[in-house]
Image 1 (spheres, rainbow, N blue to C red):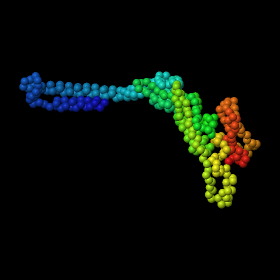
Image 2 (cartoon, helix red, strand yellow):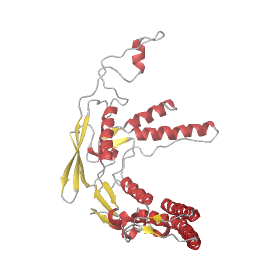
Image 3 (cartoon, rainbow, N blue to C red):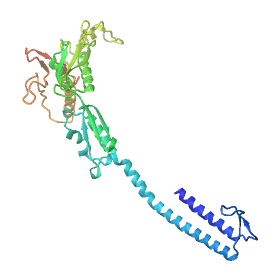
Image 4 (spheres, helix red, strand yellow):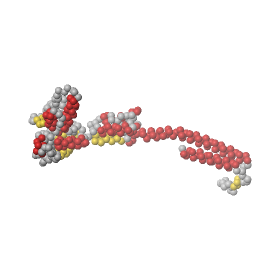
Length: 362
């Protein structure tokens, strides 16, 4: 466009120069250097000739002005259309694709149609960059894939995935004080499930917390995987239980009305024993305690507001068989070893005993 205005301006200046030349009246012969004349002397035409030159200059000036104006108008009209074409071509690689045209690579267990279903098309069934990003985020959040990449080079959308392996077995090694059944019920990684490394680390921390609340603070839990064929792994938790943490001494500070001896008689923690609320049990179920505390708090609130509550019955006293879950889910106050039928009070049993004895929350 800038070049066009320069051309029009140049044409206008050329017309002005022609007009100036027409106004000059030559008094005699003009000497010009030409290739067709030996001495360069040429006659100058008189009035009529000079008038004809002026008309030609004006006609040239008018013609160049009209042509320049028309060209400028066409360029102004064509610029938005050209810009639209440029934008269209720039965004065409992704927006020209539909969900069905997505090429999926690297999947073994997950169907390609399942992966495509995470990409939601826009108007006209097309995919833009924003919708591709949303699909990528959705695939990562499933936890089924170790890595997901999207390539739009060459005008195609190619989704390449690396699937997480499937867990074949979950094994605990080194645990003697806490049984496999209890640990299995506390962790999220399960056989036939997808291996998730963040979940495995969370499970290891959960196992450590169970030992901490049982008075074993020297515990260490190391998760390992054993690779198997067909993208399967065995998950192993190596546990070093360590020794129980004992109480060397109990010191009271600031007690004036009661002696240390009197206070020691009313507390459960004592020397030569480990720091634990249970004292006689290694079964830890704080989730059930939180449930009981929340439920009984609301029950207490209801009675204070005049609701006629006659009593509360907790189900169940012991772990047992459930029609829906079988022996897999444990919800009793007593832990039952199904192989030996040995019964061990859980932490929730001690909590519930104290609530019943005091008739209030503790």
